[in-house]
Image (cartoon, rainbow, N blue to C red; front, side, top):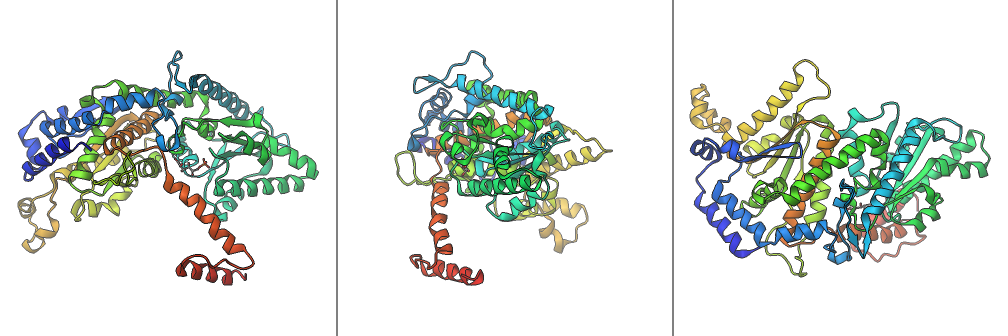
Length: 545
Ligand code: G6Q
């Protein structure tokens, strides 16, 4: 982070120590309007933050000093900004709706491939949804089981829930990620083999959890087909009608036994956690149809364009990123909360958690040197109003500063009486209470007994953003995801870390292999630390090895 630019921010924090959000509103009647903006179907009100114009200017300087403009262009134009893996970062190409767009990577226009795969997905989707694609018994596909983990799971799960009103209700969608056999077993109880399509979604097609679940699903499927009267040979051949793959690895897909005709590719320049708009979104396209999927991409594209072209002082992802940095680095806020007031967005916090924490959870900068500042906040959240009845207590009156994003939609897909008014009233009331609190005097005026006043006083001055859209649609969902993606990108640029690698995740993939062989070997190696050896021995004894 640029030292000089940061010093100015620090100086302003010190100077405004005693200025509260309440004071900021009192001194500027246009504050709400001035600290709000619109983009791609979303309205952001960031007026309930500890910022004035001078602070915003200082924060914007930080972005400028980090060469943000140039970095944005580097990403959008396919420069290899994922340096430790030697890759371009082009999730934005996946939703580029400009028919004439050309984006070159290694002298190849990637847009041609993007359009080709989108068409392949669309045609496949039409065939399955219309019932033309038949299972081995001649019946149409009714159940879709996506097997994938991490980036090959969280996006499709989140979006399938978010876009429930647009889904084909006569089909059922399941997502198996965990290598815990319970996950697969419970799913298989819900489906019928002859009407099930398994999507094996794995960029590398080597991930232990996914490949183990995929193999187990294949075994189960063949056994079911034999039970239904097929010969072993025919049952094995029927795999082609019931298993498709989404991957970058053609050889591994073929080795698994999936016809590569039924493989949907994506590319190494798509990071797992950014892969929802790639073929990883196949399960989503199957559930909402190709037209709605195209609208989702359009929503992404609108936010992408906004991010790429808007002045930083009117740029939604940039502003949200800077506010996040202010609290994280300036006020020492370690965590950050995402609170959607929309049941359909129930998995959105979990989705953002991966996107953010896997991207910016880094302690060395781009020069390979230990950073001297904190990076990557701990991200969490739950839908409102449920959270209000659990952890909001700590946000209101605890000792931690936790900036929050409140996300709401003006119109519900499911109007029932005044429930939606109540939901939104809660959202607005929470941001009001967090910002303005309740003073001791206000408590006394309400007749609160003196000895209870300290307990019923709310400090306030707790920062929040409010994001509102008209309705949650494929378009607004796409724009929302892109907003958070770009926010994370901007923060990574300012923290000077590589946001698109994930060596910590890779480590996990290797570690378990060594332990697994000790769990199953005739004699364990005993090569681990004393604690791990003890745990391995205890487990082996329990399972009779
Ligand atoms: C995402 C991460 C990680 C990845 C999974 C699944 O950015 O790299 O969550 O998506 O480990 O990997 P595969 O898709 O290769 O199975």
